[in-house]
Amino acid sequence: MEYIAVEQLLDKSYESVYKLVILASKRALEIAEGQPKLVNVDAALKPSTVALYEIAAGRVRAQKTKGEK
Image (tube, rainbow, N blue to C red; front, side, top):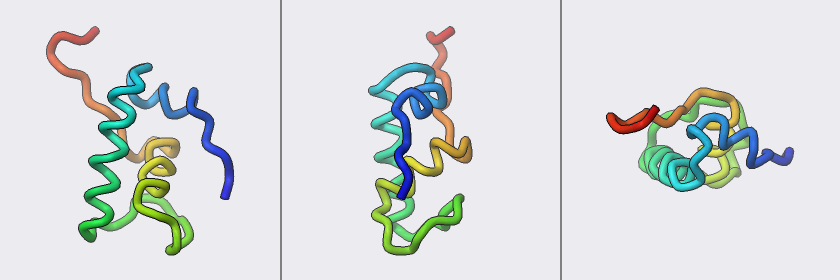
């Protein structure tokens, strides 16, 4: 398993650690409930790790809210 740099993940979540955590947790819950994985990874990985790989690959991104620039 390779290391995922936090800086790489923050680029996908508009530089917000809070949004990164929310995005990863929501996606991990979807994967745990049976949604298909969007990246090719080992089947033994936990849903939270798969979610981080998906975010790093750009397959899952945070959305801007109305008040954000």
